[in-house]
Amino acid sequence: MMLKIAAEQSLGVDQEVVVVVREYENDRDKVAVEELEGRCEVGQRGKPSLVTDLMGDPVCRVRHFSTHIMLVAECGEEKEIVGMVRGCVKDVTRGNSVYAKLAYILGLRVSPTHRRLGVGTKLVQKLEEWCKQMGAEYAYMATDCTNEPSINLFTKKCDYTKFRTPTMLVQPIHAHYKSVGWRSTAIARIPPQLAETIYRRVFANSEFFPKDIDAILKSKLNLGTFMAIPKKSLPKWDPVESLLPPSFAILSVWNTKEVFKLQVKGVSMLTYACCVGSRVLDEWMPWLRLPSFPDVFRKFGVYFMYGLHMEGKHGSYLMKSLCNFAYNMGRNDGGCGAVVAEVGQRDPVREAIPHWRKFSVAEDVWCIKKLRDAKQGESKRCEPSDWINFRSSTSVIFVDPRDF
Ligand SMILES: CC(C)(COP(=O)(O)OP(=O)(O)OC[C@H]1O[C@@H](n2cnc3c(N)ncnc32)[C@H](O)[C@@H]1OP(=O)(O)O)[C@@H](O)C(=O)NCCC(=O)NCCS
Image 1 (spheres, rainbow, N blue to C red):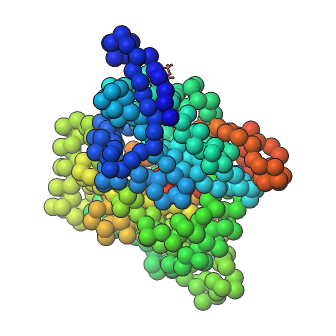
Image 2 (image 1 turned 120 degrees about the vertical axis):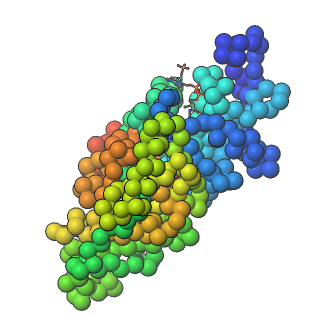
Image 3 (image 1 turned 90 degrees about the vertical axis):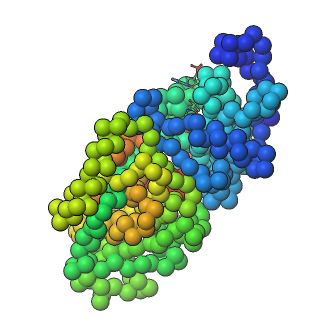
């Protein structure tokens, strides 16, 4: 894959610079790619930003998809790596139990020294070519609503449309455990097969529910699926006979800590001092139960809660208990700095998930593009209208933990 870009303006030289887009090769590119990743902070300039440590495996964010790729952009005679992008293709629901082949584009990075030269656009275009070869009908990407360069690149240069705006809810882990309500609530760990059956049933009409949910639930990164039900319904509930009790909440926990670590950089000395101060105070006077600020300035991992669903009149209370249960799991794990969930803006579970507003992202922007028509006789037969223009009948978005 070769492309030529005119770079006189930005590089200050009156010559053409050749950029080659090719597939990532671990032995050849690993060091350069890691170095570049470290220089590409995601966030607004002059504001605190989040840096990702890929822990020696640049492909880690797509490795858990059976169909995945990573591309790099290499520049000039020195073959300097100046950009990269990852992608994967999977089957997901687009509502009403209809499946579509969807590509997910993520981890796009361009060296600060080579921006606004078309490298990012070219990486996306080349990745789209591969996605089409893999049979993808649609491609989508997700970014923070404040990431103007990324949103512009996808919407203005690559014809993507703003599609869904889920909310990311973050609960930092501090010194204290949270109440699970053990007196009234029973929490059971659900075996993967039962979890799969329940999920296929309750998320059948949602969007983005992955066909290979079984692979996710069986992954070693999945720490378990948990169900909360009122204690008084426990004797009457037979998971084999009656799959779902009248009131329940369910969620699964994914350990991203084994895949990547995060670190907050760029806060002022004053903010840093206040955060340290809150922890010291909490250590001295734990009985005050101050919500001391966790140490996010060192590398930390995250537990991602996914597959959140609740039903019945106690659903909201049970969901809160389950989230607190997941929080306590993270609290017991030394390297976990936060529990995070991402749900649709209008999904009823949103109100039941405890979170810190300051850390949460009210609007994550997902942009989508149609790459090609479905094969005759496949999903087109069931749903003639296009996913992008079709008004969704559901407020529920299943956020795949591998996408996080
Ligand atoms: C986003 C990013 C990949 C863009 O790479 P790039 O090579 O500079 O992008 P391109 O040169 O192909 O730019 C294409 C278009 O994107 C938009 N764009 C790019 N940078 C922009 C900026 N700083 N401000 C506003 N729009 C911008 C413009 O519309 C641009 O077209 P134009 O130059 O004709 O105006 C790069 O800024 C980056 O690595 N950022 C940090 C990591 C990140 O946020 N990644 C995206 C995560 S989803």
